[in-house]
Length: 187
Image (cartoon, rainbow, N blue to C red):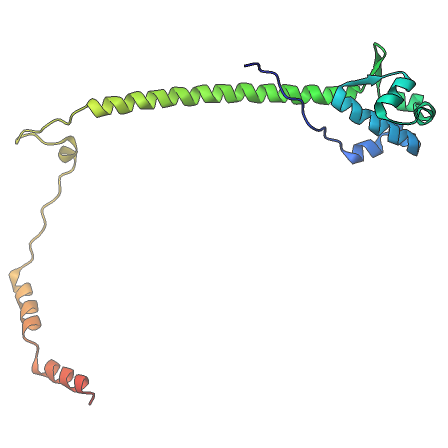
């Protein structure tokens, strides 16, 4: 499998930056249209022909429109190289995206390796725990937690205080019985 990166589908453009650019503001409306069309073509195909006749054919525009509007002002946004025009701004952006994508792929690969290593270590520990058997304690041995935690004995309360409470519960007073009977009969 090859690691060829897929071309980015779009480029980000800040309208405020473009409108603030004095070179752009000097373009006429038809020049701006040709400039924008040329940039889009450069994004898709990286370069475009520098010849007005070939450019008109590629862009599917009338040759007269391309010849009249392919001015020095429009060409100032492009670099001519081997009879082709390249938009250096877009190529810089494309390179930035490729660098970011490569760094993200490397980070993902590194993170995946860490995850796999942790998974393998966890699996080894799980397998080791399955084979381990608990130690059976002799009658005289205490578990480790039992030696640290000794509970204090519970104080026994006197039986006298319990006896009076139990007696009151088992034999309600006459007054309590009469109260109950009155309330239950609705009187």
